[in-house]
Amino acid sequence: MSAFRVALITGASSGIGAGFARVLPAATHLILTGRDRDALSSLARDLARPGRDIAIVPADLATDAGREAVIAAGERAGVDLLVNNAGLGFFGPVHRNDAADERVMVEVNVTAPVVLTRALLPGMIERATAPGARRAGVIMVSSISAFLPVGRLATYASTKAFKLHYAQSLAADLSGLPVDVLALCPGFTATKFGERSGMRPWMFHRAATPEQVAEAALAGLGRRPLVTVGSGAVLAPLAQRFLPRRLMAAGVVAAMKMLKKQSGT
Image 1 (cartoon, rainbow, N blue to C red):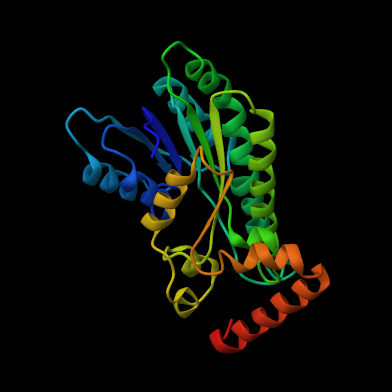
Image 2 (cartoon, rainbow, N blue to C red):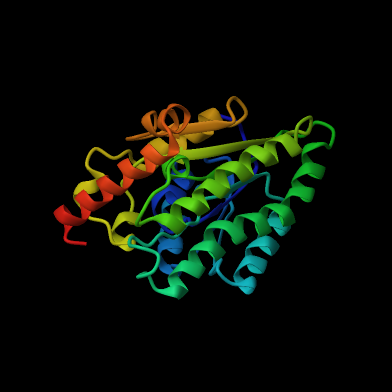
C-alpha cells in the first residue's frame, strides 16, 4: 500500500468511504466529507491517533457551495490522495423516478468528481513533482454496473460508466506524471446504498465489506488501472467483452423484473 500524507475521502459518512478511512495507515491525515455531520464526527473520533490530523467537512456535493468547501479543505491540507467515492442511486424506471432524484444523481456522481478532480489536481501534481516527494493518487469509485446497461438503475449505472471512462481517460492524460489513477468497480457491497436506493437486503447476500473493497483499491493503486472486487466483479466485465449488448440488456432487464417480483418493488 502506498504511503500518502493527506487523503480526502468523499462520501465518508458510511459505506466504502468510511472503509477507506478505516484501512488507511494511521500516518495518513484525513479529510472526511459527507452530508451527515454526526457520522463524520463519530468516525473521526474512532480513527483519532496521536499526531494524526482529521478534518471533517459536512457538505452536499450536489451544490456548488458544498463542492467549493471540500476543495478549499483539500487545498489547505495539501491533499495527495483523492478518493471520489460519494454516490447516490435510486432504484426504479427513469420515467417513474422523481425528476429531482435523477438530477441529483448526476450532480453527485458525475459533476462533483469532475469539479473536485480538476480543482485539486494541479496542486497534487506540483507537490508530487517536488524533490523527494511521493506519488499522488486519485481513486474513482465506479461500480460493476458501469459495464452493463441496467434497467431500473439506468441513470445510476450511466453515471458509474462515466466515472469508469473518466478514470481511464484521466490516467492517459497524466501518463508520465507522478499521479496514479485507479477505477474501482465494486460488486455488491454491504453498505446502506441498497436500502437508500430502494433495493432489498437479500440482494446483498455474500456482499463484500467496505473495508475489503477499500483494501483491494489501495493495493491496486499504482499497479493496475482497474480493480473489480466483490460479487459479480469478474462476470460483468467479461459479459461486456464477449456478449452482444442487446443480449446483455435483455438479461439485465429480466433479472430486474425478477427482483421486482421477489422484492415487491
